[in-house]
Image (cartoon, rainbow, N blue to C red; front, side, top):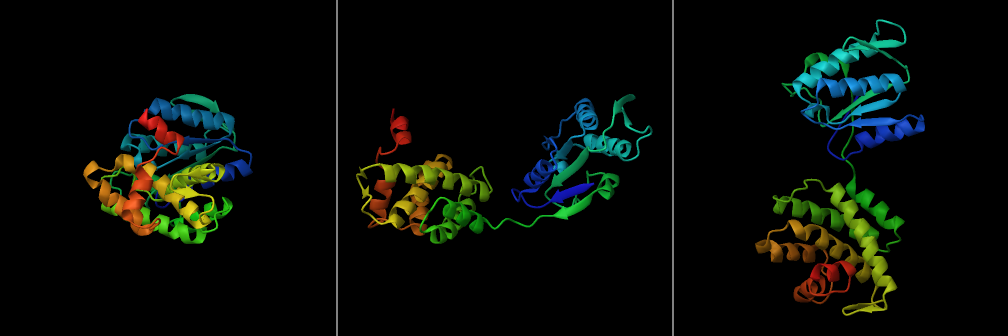
Length: 272
């Protein structure tokens, strides 16, 4: 049974879903959760057997020991059914289509998981996923959005988010990839607004494309991250942004243009 493992957000589940699309199979995803009852798991396995769809147990190491033990017992029934074309779950027979597939994902090899049944571990065939190259992903997104300075902006954005994650350790998200993609999406909207506006109080279309692109990115990062920053750390946070994107004449101008205006619809809505 395939067990795809690797760090968070490397695309383990998405790869399996994409593979299912290529085969024309419906994919059912089971998130990692400690309180699944055997009744729920039985319904999942019965649905997979009856329809021939694929199922992905995401973050399998998050399941409880009772659930893992039940999953192991049920997998035996799938691999060696007592009756051809039938499986028995909870003393009840279900039709079994051989197109059904079962996959698992997780963050490690499970060798250090004391609460993970060794019998189930022996059934899994590990497939390792490397960490994503976030800078390359960001560059691709910037290039697709027709940024002139994507090659310069992408490493600075990623390194800035890594530094912020380490310094402001109380922020809820420990990932870098997800905030990077969300910031780029928001930056695209801001960039579009600026280019369609005749002028802003501190920026016009006569300014360099680099300034407009960098401001769009740093403003998107500011709007997304400032919510989780403690008020006493605001200035430190803004200096972090300025150290990676030193736009405008000085830090005071940078801070004012980033925080003290109502040029965008979201800002006006917040004031109201």
